[in-house]
Length: 616
Image 1 (tube, helix red, strand yellow):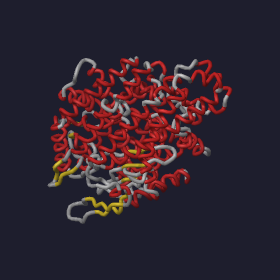
Image 2 (image 1 turned 90 degrees about the horizontal axis):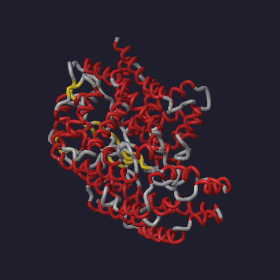
Image 3 (image 1 turned 90 degrees about the vertical axis):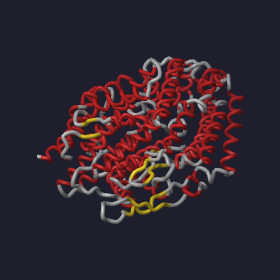
Image 4 (image 1 turned 45 degrees about the vertical axis):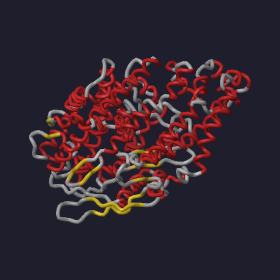
């Protein structure tokens, strides 16, 4: 399929409606326009940038390698100029790989795009290998000399946040030759296994109701009001995942071992320490979050799902009932224009400037919404590079949860636009804070919809959906984190069989979701489709971190008389230049306080209390 087939324009999508009615028109769903990155795969602009990256990287290495100490001692401003040059090369490489990656995400089944993405990865790895010396050598500079230079030269002081973050990695840095080897082999190492997972996952076909579905619409059927349809979908997903279980188990075992080797060479003790370092969050802060959520399992998920079992008229639920809609409720379907207006109205009610940024995504071709064969499942907001803009990918099916996903990803997008002013080296936010704007955007949209509820039944539906989303974000993600910990710790003793992985998965699910469920054997392979386990080990706690943080932040917003929006925008604009403690201080919040997490969790408890009150 030529690039232009989904680079520009819209596609009209229909959803099956209730039995006996016509299909529901979803309206025109936008498909992203990647021309802001490059005109097409064969463009001179793309080829020239790839070549320029290699040439500039080689030149940069020849001019600066093994000379940074002399450069710093001679004139600190020259070191700042070198960092600025390094940043410019990094930005161009980011532009190249963003373009190739977005093309690939749009259709991972297309061999042309697959080859294009693979070739781009290799070219960028080759060019960036000539830049690897720079950060390694910066970390060998004398701390006192560098600190004095930062104090003396404003241009170097500008990069202090980046240098501070960089030097946090210093204790885990290896010698140059080993770092070079790790870097160059990444294409044939973890990146190759990531790609195998992606291409295997998007090639899966699920036979349901006489149709062949990809993963996303198959998972969507687990939210169907018809219990038999949910059961059929759940068992078909299980059948297909089980057929590929050996492949997914091999990928998981290989990547866990690959991580263990890297961690051991670098000197990380705990399996999650490298993620905590990358997130610039202290392990004890994460431990406090995890402990608080674990202790809340009975009062949150166990309690809610017992209530839900009663609503569904079930003594015990199966795993395919977890996301079932409430009975006797016709779930609203949002066409694209309704979804757009819902989110923008909610954003505008908080801050018109926030809505204005979000509106650009709709008007300028920055969103890809339709479900397509071969398209990556799930949703994301890709920041690309500060000189361009982010892109949002969805698999939009019109459900209320899809509207919340749109609000979530646009929150990321707004955050990425605002942080872009920090430049390529400092715009990226640690994962723990990267979820702040996305979850806050969801909360704004939820509160806006809740205010419009005209009946008790409508309010009950909205509350139940929000509680389930929060349980999925907090309880489920911490359960994922606990599962990952067990997998990586057990992997140190040898390979894990598919059966062993299934055992770990089932034990964690039972603990986190509670006695309202009976987990049939068909649920055993469901661990295998979670992409975060493959792409970003231990990423998942960032969702719970963000949700609890936003709950506390939103409480401050509700009680603030003035000035909250300005503080909030400053938080987003900071990107990666400030630690979470510094960013939260203006709001009177402290994530290192163990009680901080309980305050965040209490908002979920309050919503469950309200829902229970509507039942009485």
